[in-house]
Length: 247
Image 1 (cartoon, rainbow, N blue to C red):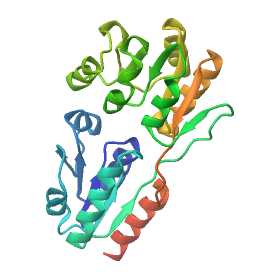
Image 2 (image 1 turned 45 degrees about the horizontal axis):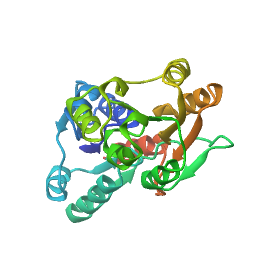
Image 3 (image 1 turned 45 degrees about the vertical axis):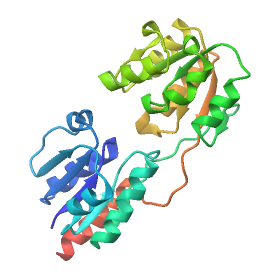
Image 4 (image 1 turned 120 degrees about the vertical axis):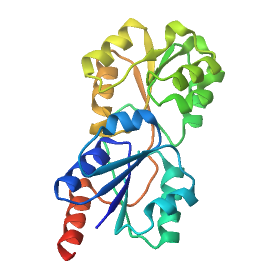
């Protein structure tokens, strides 16, 4: 019995190792070499890195007993492609959902990064962006001098910052997890007035960012998570166990 996981998240790594420990061969698909490094090497787990189109996904899942979509909550297009690939290959699919976070009172909530950027046009003050390098172009019209993007320490991230006009002294190229204390220190050091984030849940450090923003008196802006249906980690793991027991 073979399982295929499209991962790149804490939950995906955890699930892949749990299934391998139960004796199931697991193929884990991650989009980048950074994702491969985070996944690491474990007995019983084959890691494939690189972005796939729908046809490549279908070839990868073909013959598997189950596919689990454990990609990031905001990876909407990836999830759509995975669903279509599984339907084409006639492979059952489970969506593993990350736990959502409570939203603190006073938070400005937006449906998209574009909406958050539009709201910020009428404000003044430095902005700490923790939404990832892919969103930088949306915030670029606000002026690079206002932006302090926290991005992964990758060449592609630095290129995105440069394209958005962000001064090199404003680039926070760091790898998490980040404590409340570190978040708070960055807010104070760079005189941040607004912290823009997504709801990565407890695993994504949302609570630490929210607490730091409150302590350092920075306004919290949240890009709301896309609505979708799925299962939590324990339920997905139990479903996999039941499939293995049924053989």
